[in-house]
Structure formats: structure tokens, C-alpha cells
Length: 230
Image 1: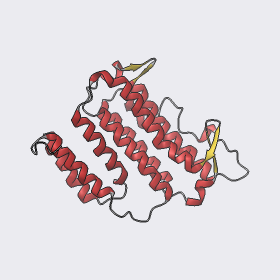
Image 2: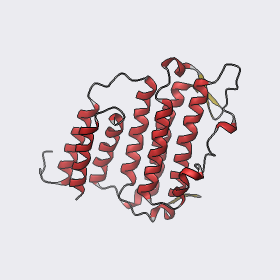
Image 3: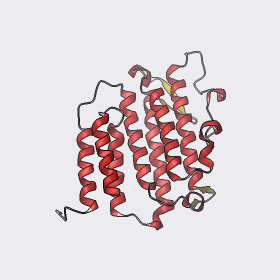
Image 4: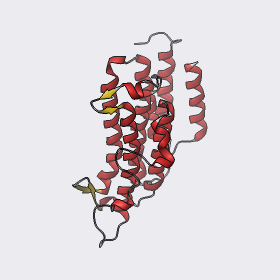
């Protein structure tokens, strides 16, 4: 499996090796919640890899029953924000407060993210919508990474299903993966190029370390991605 050494695939696999090397470095001291959220960022990277390079027209033409691809991505943004609010409520509520988060504490409904900040997702192209989802992801991580480890054993709700906060945080990554699987079904007839498969793995590994690895090596890798794309 040596292959040629001047192909895009070779250079992308080299990128993957470099991403893995960063992810394997010793992490700084971080909470368990922060480490769990790395999986969410990795799932977000995989979602990016599944979509980047596609024509913006598929946002409104690709459809799963009543849901367009745009609807699925707007739902992903809304759920990201709602999950963070729900976890934060469960971790910090007083014992005499209800287990379910009050509706007034939720930032939006499950289908539409807040218009003031995310209304652009109604008309934007793929790259911009992914950036908006990334903004929602960054907000979740900023809210939830500082959770004390002992807060993870507190009770929480996912719909009507009771679980602890630890599993509730893990659901953030699971929902992003579910979103990507749904998108894969929509786009399966459009082909799955070898380069895209490698890029998706690179993007997943990047998500595992980008919240804590040094910015310098990440920037150098980003420049190499740009050179490969060119």
C-alpha cells in the first residue's frame, strides 16, 4: 500500500499523521467535561468533512421527507444551543428546583436557532452555515468545559428519559454524529471520493485536540491544507 508519493492522497495521509501526533501529545489538566466535549468537536469535524466542497444548491434541493439539508443543519445549531442550556441547568440547579429545565431558560425551539445571531442560516451557503454551527459549538464548550467533575453525577433529562449529566454531555457528540449520518443518506448518490474520506478523518482528529493543542502547529497544518487544495 505504498503508492505514489506525489498524489493528493499521500499528502492528505501525511496531514492525518500530523493531526494524530498533535492529538497524542500530553494534554494540560482539563475537566472530564472538557475531555468529553472533544468528542463533540471531533463529530463536528466529521460533519464538516462530509459537506465541504458540495454545491450550495444542495442545501435546499437535498431532502429527507419534509426536511431539507438546510433544515437539518439549522436543527443541529438549535440543538447544540439547547443541549448546552439543558446540561448547565442540570449541573447547577438547586435541589428544590425542577429536574426539567424551565422553557424560559431555553434559547430557542428545536427547529430554529435564535434569529438575531443565526438568522443568516436561512439563506447562507454551506461554509457559512458550518461556521455558524461552529460558533454554537464554541459557545457550548465555553459553557460546559468548566463543569466540576462531581456535577457529572447529578440527574438530568433528555426529553423524558432520565440520565446523569455525564451521559447528557456525551449526547452532544452523539447528536452531531446522528446529524452526519442523516446527511450521508441524503448525499449518498453524489459519490464518496477517496480524498473526502481522508479529509473527514483529518477533521475528526483535529476536533480531538484543537481545544487544547498549540496554535502554531495547527496553523502550519492549515497552511498545508491550503497548499494541497491549490
